[in-house]
Length: 547
Image 1: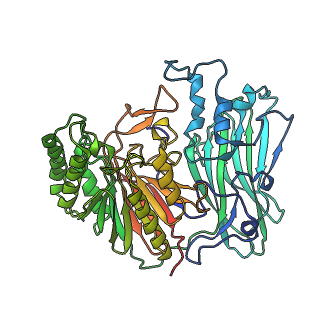
Image 2 (image 1 turned 180 degrees about the vertical axis):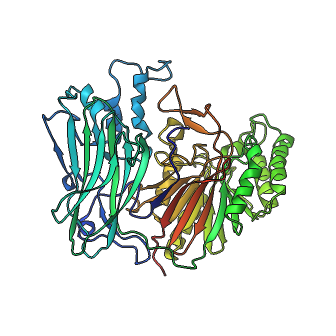
Image 3 (image 1 turned 120 degrees about the vertical axis):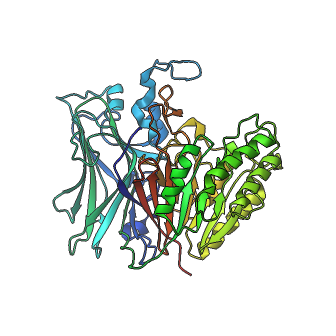
């Protein structure tokens, strides 16, 4: 399994976005709050157009890419591509290993301008980097106002490859005083990176603020004497921490699974048992698509038989109502019409309590809104990706309504958006026209938690969840969550840096989630079906105004 991590608690919330807008004067003067029960964003240190907000201090001779550099993400990938080497997977197989960019392209959280300290690119562009010419470079924030705060959280996206003696450090200094180290990456196992790589991760660091301190300066220091590897940073946010959950707070809880596809049936009993143990009072089971395998030549009889297999696996369990999205495998048959396949999906869903008539719908479950999106039959040619204008209007109207009600909204769709959660840096996940349109709508609402399947990338990975800002959307973005799969696991391709492949070095890691919605936050936990252990957790603060 690529990039495994120990059981860790991550916090995501409005203001801790995978992308955030550049710091405005108001943000630097104190930020925009979300009320006393949620996070207050104090400062947004994104790099898109915000170069003047940061300074860089690099020892030694100046050279292209030597030390911290603010760059468009895609320009970084281009700079790292080898010259004179064919890297087109269609014509240059087998690809030279130099085409693989040392994992740079796996920074799926990143969009737009990022900060990069990259010795590999610097050396390729002519900089001398060795034991006698090490790179020591520091990225320095402006003074962040922290007066009156007891503690803050520093949040940032981090993509780090460990070179032999490289060290990455984050420090804080209050009111011009001495620096205090708050995070260290190094080859030592006791470091925050465990001595290894941090692939598309998010760091959330609590920092206690001294009494009477007024400003804090954060520094990202990188030292490396090898002409290789890198540290990339994006989406730097300083915010106040969430308070502890109030005693006796009771959530509305959901069970979540995805992508059975028949291959996952051997794990279904264990998955449902685990979900019942972890969320025995769940109000619903959210099924994020690909209920069946759906062979391309499947007849009506064969497709119905696959749905029956899933029902048989469900039959021995005490389940809440099941609310499924429709996946690509559920409508893959070349033999059946789209209408027939949607009819089979609706029939199956209603057998398990969904009470639906089409592929997109809204349910309010225990006071929690759940919006499900999906492809439709009979969509006009001028409408894209089998999603009608009527469905787009439905999404816009319902999200606007729930925003005014101060509710966090669960939006469920089988497909993820590109450059969000694990694996979505790959060409396979490039957005089509409707994906851009849907994400543009969702990006207006920081109270949206978007649940997607389809990738089969494991929730063990650091970027299983991310908060994403869309151009022109809300400054705090929306939360995207990869729900894993019961069928086979996928991971980076060994043959193409922009592709994926099934994880042939199994054992597999089929995963499931629970979602617990409180008034002021939602807690999402991921579990390994084979071990029964929790493997990840995030808290998403509710930023919506109370009405």
